[in-house]
Length: 505
Image (cartoon, rainbow, N blue to C red):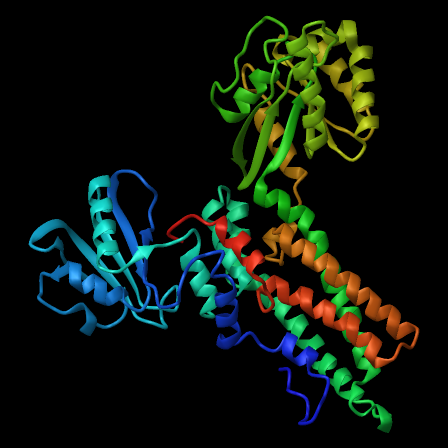
């Protein structure tokens, strides 16, 4: 743990900037973000914790110093017990009442500080899911002294009260938004502190050496060396390796979190829309014998093997005088540019006549997008003879650097093989091994900047720079580390992060 320099030390800048983010530091941040999220730490807030709309049950959440007192005003327990005198983490049955008028029979759960999600007193009201009942209870709470919570304010309070760091708070939003097994696993890992603990450990080790280097500056006249340069060199090498590994993991983490874009391209009427429908197992796109039916891109997502894929059915590529169809074809190339995987689909029936043309188009895509994963798919093979199928297989085998499949989108024969082929393009090894994977672009950017500063430190060590110059780059690296976990933050950053949360979380 970082220790304060000796009494009389004049180089306190690093200590002040890098000190552990205790409650007083958090309260200062709290005060700075008041203009962004108009809250006062003595306020008690209320919001729906379940989605809007009617349902079997709904949950309302109160948090703040008066949460239990306000709940006591509006709730009468069937057992006659007073809520304020009950133990934390207990559930109570009774009636929500506005004066003598009963609004609903409900369950109230009490969480007393600091053992709650926000670190404050929290009350959760489970009522019947009528829109009318929900609004009546919220309005009643507002009249008794609550105010409506801002977006993400419950999680913001949890962060400010030290219940989680900033990267864990961001993982809460990712967990809510997760729509595949992979994105869910990544969010759970980050929310449990897997990523932030690794960053905190690196930052703490760097802080230990940084404090010693800063201390040397106060004894410059004595020419004293507190920081062992060999050990410091090993630490810088270790930090460099870890940062590079985490930065490299972002390419995988980003697609696992957001879904892998797959563009289905080819000439008109080769079965692109039929293939999309087969993959989605529903009639999502219009299928017609008329060439050029799809004039705009159609997108939809499914989960294959726990991985999210975003399929994009594009307009058929051909020469056309139709202005609208031309715009669709232009969009097709834009989608190819944005896709990670490209499925080039062609009509196997026409391959005997136009095979050389298809091969030219395949080579064009490969040359124009050399880094794209390309899957060549021969469609309508159900209409080929056995001999024609064998010949087509031999021809496609000769195409270097590409995967290929024979299928029938109409009968769905071969669609499962295509799904398995798509999974082969995803690096799930790190996910299976529970390795730390970066999914957040803000973290990625901060690590890039931290690595840049660490490289400067390494260059300084190699060139024999003095401690005061090394300290400048070390401070910057520590700053970027602290930005990730929230040990160093600002009002604009916090405002942007928590504004993206749903109200009630």
